[in-house]
Length: 176
Ligand SMILES: [Zn+2]
Image 1 (tube, helix red, strand yellow):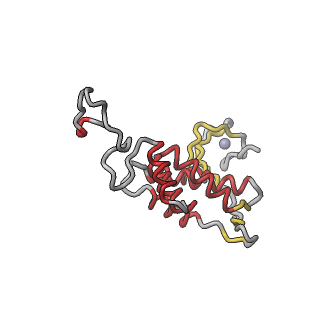
Image 2 (spheres, rainbow, N blue to C red):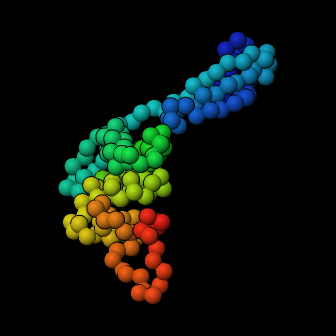
């Protein structure tokens, strides 16, 4: 559906479209094809309440601030752009909306994990540790090692293997 010119009611064409509010809105620069008047429209989708379905069947309102806080906490001291976290939350929000306004909590969590993994693998693991609640701490350690990262409190990434006795010694500072 086209937007009509506020001056002459003529048809307008879009000169430029730009995402606003982190993708929640679109700002369009338009020009009337009849009288040439230029104006700007602002398109924002109507907000429907979104819900997260818990394992026990309860529905909770989707709290985008809470999700963003959890993700930012996991990304603490990691090179993660808060804008990227915001975009991730917006993407998840859009998916809940696309699923009819409700999504299972596990699916929200898995999407958050997958998105965070793209941004920063350590932040992802920290989020996973809280979200999935690694029962066994060694599981977390194993995941860290699989990424080539020394778990906290360990100096060496590869864990305890002595180099061959006659092989060259690599000073540990020079590694990893
Ligand atoms: Zn016009």
